[in-house]
Length: 422
Image 1 (cartoon, rainbow, N blue to C red):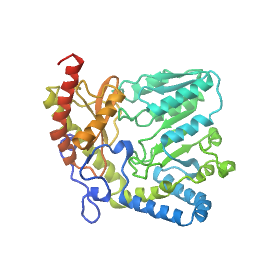
Image 2 (cartoon, one colour):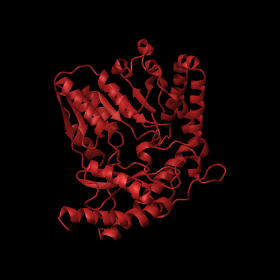
Image 3 (tube, rainbow, N blue to C red):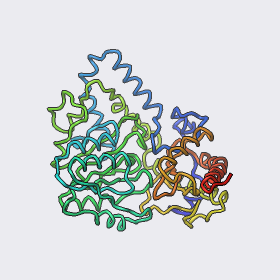
Image 4 (cartoon, one colour):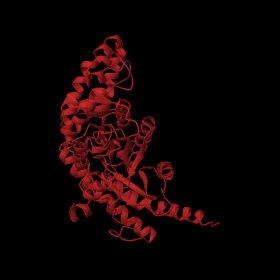
């Protein structure tokens, strides 16, 4: 990213009729929404489509449910085109964790085998790997990847944990806590050569990365469509290739169980899958209004701008190091950055653990009227910026001017409590 892109506020995106992009969403205007990466935000076009589908379902349930497999299969075709994969490889699941759970349930017993994960992994996914390892009578090996590790260093750190006892590798495409990529392409080739199944947690990838499975060899890949793709929540893609995919079944048994993969996932009894059917409306709205390449450039420029102004505000409020120094307010080197996401280091005393990060998130929303994401890695707390088209430079300037001084004061208070100050 050039210096101009980082320091210049990008011009806000507008709807086709000239209104601000945020008016295409139903987000509360009294709040600042700076955490798209956690739960996403559904545009009105997709909400309206889902509401129509739900009304259709309620008008005639006996007609609706028997026809669902055909309609879900059609939605899969559109979603597969968005991800640049074949619809025969793609099943729809409620979220990335559900897809990963389906993979864990499908893998054959591998007595005494180890599962390799990284210390950047999503907590629920790692806990699932630990349960699977216990069923196997094996254990989980955790690859320690430094935050600033580049592609080669990250690859070496993970590959070093692979061995004759490795029965599965689980790695993020884009990490949740640290907003960085992992070298999944190189790991995929290595795992294939060793005959080790690879599961890629691509929860953040759809919409953020164009054609995320290009050049990627893996047995299983899962990605949430409710994040950057803006689909209704409860919609994710599971892509499976290779001999193990025929072992995959939905977590809920239904009448489609005898069908081949992925058709058996299209029928889930009385589950409300209107989110699946409305997902193409969300994807199509973004494409028709701005085009995905424009969106990716905008959110990356905006996140870079937010990183600069908020980082500078933290440095000023705490007397910390300047940008580029790696201290409070400094640029955080994540080794393999991704568009639209950044980390800003918080002052000591804030978000040192996951529980503290979640508490800070709730306090910021309740007291400051800002939805923000805080994460913890290696005992250090970070503000994770994750932008979308409804955000503007003014959102990040507001956070810098209004929220940063308060957060700095909270940090000083926490430090005082830690040292027993009255």
